[in-house]
Amino acid sequence: MRFPFRIIPLAVLATAGLAGVAQAQSAQLKSAEVAKVGENRFKWFFGVQGGALFFGTQRQTQSGIPAAGAHVSVVSRRGGLQLGFEEGFGSEEPSAFVDATSGTGIRQVEFDRIRRYGFNLTGYPVRGSIEPYLGVGFGMIQVVDWRFDPNESFTSPTEAGLSTALGNQASASAFASFLAGLQFRVGRLAAFSQYQISTAPRAGDLLRGTGHSLLGGLRFSLGSAREDVKGGGY
Image (cartoon, rainbow, N blue to C red; front, side, top):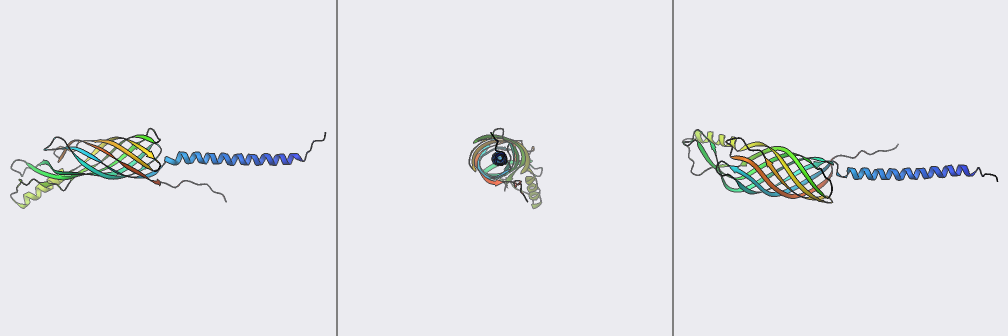
């Protein structure tokens, strides 16, 4: 029986065509895998939060006030950076600072608000719809618009000015912090709650002792934080 040699070129062409189709399908699968892996890489998020700030002062051991704030963060697959602030709203919170110009050596003050700025490095050991996370960071906490107790008096404007300068120095300080949280993701939206503990201010500041906060809120994905690298032909 004569072998139909003309079939050989056709078979070669068919094999090459099938190989091309398989290669294209493989490339599509790889692209899908890369897209899936990159889904959680370098994403911007904007969040709002509310809860409570817990603190001590020179005239009260522990107090808690309601707080609200916002933050932005960029998150990779296992880590992220977060920058945010919170504002606490109290009412006539009492404190004091050392002032040698006072007859008692102490100036008593009151305040209504506390403002906190923070920068945190976060880590996500488990990724999925439910994600625990941990973080360390630093920031600044400030007593906003403090005022002297109505019973305080001054012998001269110079004395009042010196006391005000001392009070301003005692109203703000830096801190280091540790946080732990849990977030629930649904699409581009995530609900979260977190606890944060911060180091104590300097001795003699209006705030004293270790600070604590318990916050919860929502985060919204704003999309990728960098452009994807795309290949192209000529």
